[in-house]
Image 1 (cartoon, rainbow, N blue to C red):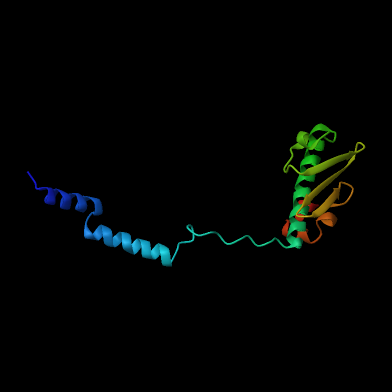
Image 2 (image 1 turned 90 degrees about the horizontal axis):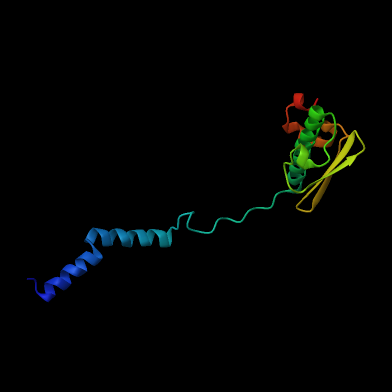
Length: 139
């Protein structure tokens, strides 16, 4: 039988592990404390999106939604009664049907409001944002 002193020493060794384990734990603690990894710290706050990029993104969004409405019209021979019929791509787009052949789309993002009219050619509506699209797509 082991003496109580030997049992206590054995218990301590089991608790702390080998000297290598203790050394590794201390080194890891020092590293994390003085050189915290990116996943452990707060991420850098997001930079605000420039208004021009917000405008271009809204134009692209409304253009794509308008294409879905036009596709619906080509498939069914009529404009949809709601965007849900044509396939809504974003929740906050307002759709107004104007008669049998025309419609308007409106969207708001970060305080900017934009309205698309189906009577305006796509290239004119997209403006500078059209440079990012293939020219064949807009004809």
